[in-house]
Length: 382
Image (tube, rainbow, N blue to C red; front, side):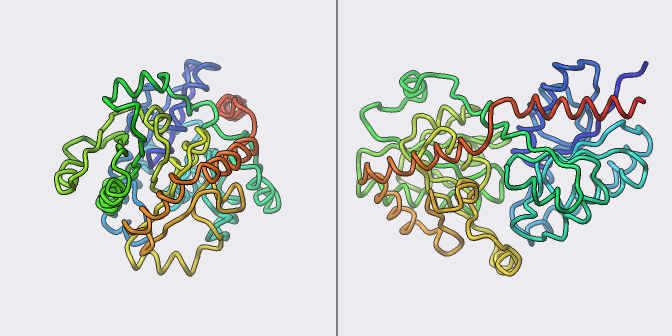
């Protein structure tokens, strides 16, 4: 019998992370399943055959997609051909909705079952996409408990498995050992700067974060700063901005959770990193900037009060959000000083984060998702 074939598409760094752990969990059940598709280094390390790299596809914002349109369309055409020629037994799509829903339609039209792992944010904007999902997706797996009723009401076969980050977010070193390896002074307070995982996101946010660091150090000279470099980002990519600001910043490759763990405060781009910091109970400030046109469009479409995942899950502002024009060095430094000078405020933030973590379910989400994957592959065989 031929091994089962799965086409997996993870178009962004967070999708690559979750996809890699799902592949690992599936292989623990059935080592013969073969994966191919779109992703990053995480999927590649798990033996997934990458037809396209997610680095060339990921964008933040609406108009920003225009700058990646050529590789996006090329990947869609190539994956359509792969559906026809390789006939996978299952397609697994991870978030990345504008791309993945097109692929879901193609697969569905060819009679190939589609599992969607990690819901598009239909509860925040473009809720009409639920109808497309109901038409083209055989099974939806969601990570947040409030997502399941939305899909169920639309007739989608949905399962809530909990959040896989509860298993993934673990420092590899004790904090004192990590400080020593990173060359940090344990007597000084450490601020983690997280400018994002995509190159254009870093271009937009890093200069602002570095300017914030300069203002903070002027007020509190004992502060030290550290940046965990996202996969695919090198020191050479960051050095043009670092050279312009008179603040020493330590760069660390591949140990993001250790960097977060040694930081007293995180100043983070909106995204998965904010939930990772929440699991580590780290006070944070969330910053978000896209092109002015993207922001204007999003403002008319987005129907939620908050942008950061920790705040969305909590239903209240656990971490301050600085969006667009408010994401400027003076405002960021001001919010950071409020937190750093107020231990009671830090305590309230960490308590609220602990409550958010409790709402995310029990550990073992990737294993529960893998059992659903294997069940779909078994039913395809019959």
